[in-house]
Image 1 (cartoon, one colour):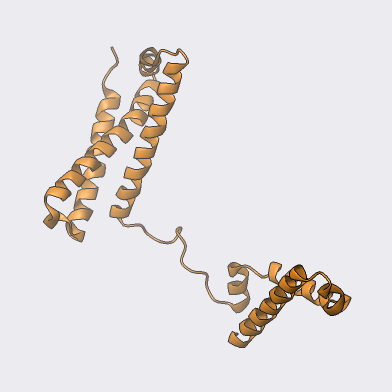
Image 2 (image 1 turned 90 degrees about the vertical axis):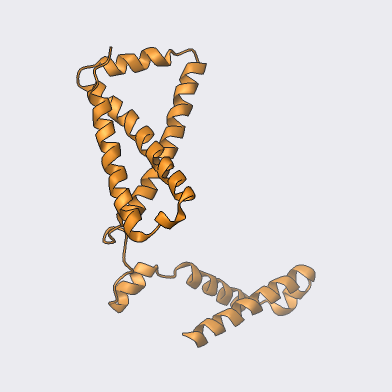
Length: 182
């Protein structure tokens, strides 16, 4: 494999050297370039572009493909970290959307009251809006506590705190969704 890679690298270096020489001296094209060397160069370039993918090479050799996200079980700590980032991005998009709606003349509080007062959609809409706020806020509080007490950051504590974080956010979200709109 190494010898093949080295010979390909030498050929490509030689082709690059010839191409530079031809650009610097246009008369060198008639002296050194023949149709057979051009066809060899184009064949070389074509072989690089038709290289099989990683998955195709692994199937050919019978070896398994590297573990994929679908079979990897994320720890609860990773899930809470990803959820914090996603809720932060979602809150940014929501604030941008509401402010854009307000800038074009929409009445955001009236729209929210209308959504909240619908019988079936209202509680679900409130929960969809509440979960990112509650989760991101509680996660921020957790990080402030960690900043003040770095000794609390170990695998056992962080895993337990992540479970509590999801539980608290879920309870507060359901509670907020069930509060009747006035």
